[in-house]
Image (cartoon, rainbow, N blue to C red; front, side, top):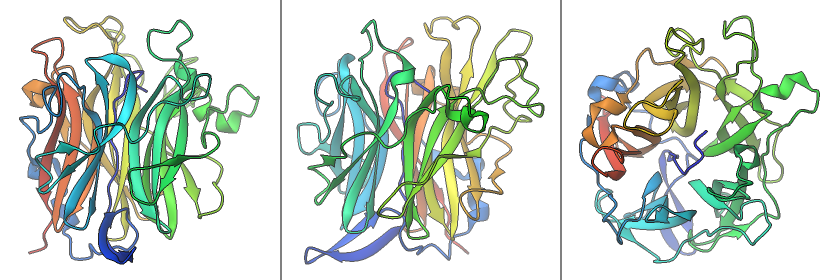
Length: 384
């Protein structure tokens, strides 16, 4: 879990609905219109682009740190929900940008669509990693919030929570009275220790007439099959579902494949921590998850000053969105594939535009040449 906004988020299958007397094409994964997609083409070698940013520090204002992209489409217009600080000065806030082509983006409105909570509330320190889906006639936003901002002596990732708000227009959002997912804590119930310490980075999708809300979590997730050593844990992906009335209890759905990303420290005491910033999309009736993979270093690799870094983008799929996950054998991209992501590549967001899958993502090379922003790759899933 990143302590400073990094994130992906979600966008699903486009579908057409009638709302407020207008036709709206919304990304939220309600009906699956993607039956003619060739999923066999969804492999790393078929992704193109991404070598340059489409949104940078100089876009839509000076030194806004654009991060955590999440794209939907309404009518012929693309909407992106993303986070930013003002020249790296907290707090992190959530904005909306609009585009006619999904490449060139304009801030609209100029002010955040979701600001930090009131002083003393659970998300007074920051709101980040936004994701929006259209469900039951409303836009539903989810985000990670925490009470104390970075730099505050009381800041801790243990304060991370997942929030929920609804909107009629995708701009003015009304928060729930409180967060919807929090760490289980040390309550003595070993069955939920997998999310005992940290939860965050929500990735919703509409599937089976419900919202499936995936999130990253960390806890005392040990096990003899993981060969991690005493006291070690994994960063995993959990799930809660919403039927329009109530939320289910959290359940763990995806652990990192230990043959690809082993948690057991290597000879340098560096290891793969696990999966972060999950993003969900429905393709040909299956749930596909995109996420980044975090690595822990014993010592910060120069010139970088941090030891926890998001370094790869990866993909997995499941027929029911809960079990039987098939994880790709290799990453879509690594941070070293592009010069502007030399520190981190993170927060993937899959958006289906016709038969073209656009994979938005964030990254930076801030210690190298001061690049920070959002890029996009594409993969053609058109069936021959």
